[in-house]
Image (cartoon, rainbow, N blue to C red):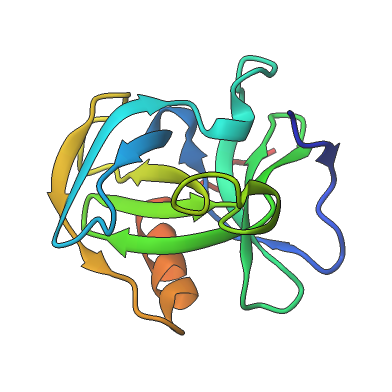
Length: 162
């Protein structure tokens, strides 16, 4: 089922990042994902498989309470498609960030409690090749700040003249 397209509301804030389409994937992985994360069978993110050719880029949006984020795709026309209502950041390395999309609620029927989604940093090749990476768990309470810092460092939004 495809999430509805909608503009970002006044209580949501898109992070100023642009993650290329070929760097985000639904994955099969080895919980807990540390000290080594093994990711295989990389596919387009779960709720973004049957759409308009997946144009644009991925980003995250801070929700109104500032303690939660959602995963979105911003289309070239500026429309925002929410892929996951909420995410739970799990592990990180210099090369990858792993999160669970929709870790509870509607996706609670999924084994492990969500849709494992991998973001590949520019330091490794883009594309759907799996791999293994040494990772660190994201600590409870600081996972949003740690993930946000990683995303801002790896995928700063380009500022193009209009």
